[in-house]
Image (cartoon, rainbow, N blue to C red):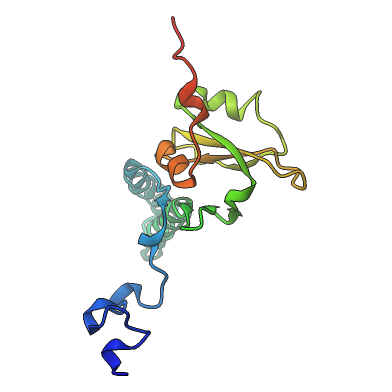
Length: 190
């Protein structure tokens, strides 16, 4: 058997299965996921961090009476702001090809999901407030306006449901293969 027709190359040509190169070498291909979203902080938070760095750095410079070491206040404040905003925007929501939901660090198999619904921005405060079950699993990011509610059907798990922030709730439910229970509700009338 020649190298071009080996089981490792089912397409028959070397171009049929290109190796991953560059920045993504050795990393699983995320395009195979049914859904993938990073919950980055809004862009204007970065502008606010620049202003905060300037103000706090200037205050430190004033308190240091113009010392050459006062520049450290700007650098330290800037580094703290970057690290904080970067860490806040690292949350990743994804659905694997096996329909497993990965919400930040937790994994939910599709087999234990009963039903799901979108939580619009108008109902978010009620879902997180008086209606929230303390045993629910929560991946909440305040800068993301919409969420999904995923009700579990697992008698061994004390968690009744998951509330997960996402900017694309309909796509997330579709990737899980769940019909949106909120889509069946009639629109509220005034």
